[in-house]
Image (cartoon, rainbow, N blue to C red):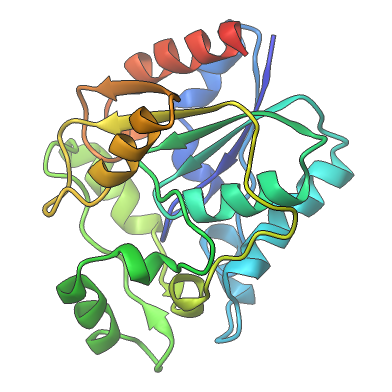
Length: 233
């Protein structure tokens, strides 16, 4: 059985993977869902200097203190930026990297470099206290119950996490990678280029009939895919 470590997306935290916990347990997998500094239950630690490296370091500390090895690392959305940094810096602990409708950063690129100009401008105009990006909307197919659950718990994201450029410390990644693309895509479909790049580079690619957060809207189907990834890893 496998250990899955989650690098969560913007505005959420480990709690957003709640539906996946019993599904993982029944299959014998271990699911580790840490929360990055400044969001979720760690929102009280938020400050303007939190950046991408802060969140990468959060995850590296979990790997060390939990003594996690042979991990399947899953990066969702913005968490793809974080997961790439973790996989770069902890290559001896990660056996497979999964991008769940996520950014796959190149050297010298930030999350904002990949976002449409209007999205960047909208976030910059809406900043709270000059550095906090308010939560965006949830996918249209989210149930009313889940929308209420999400809305009550999502927290602003420090702007530097989107602005900091990503840099490899140990060169390009060579470990096995998988991309899961949500077919009910966000307006602009800006995760499609990463899926297309994954195909060109020969990764395993799945297309899930779900919106951007299948761990909320389609947990059973996501579990089926992740279980298949685990069996092949």
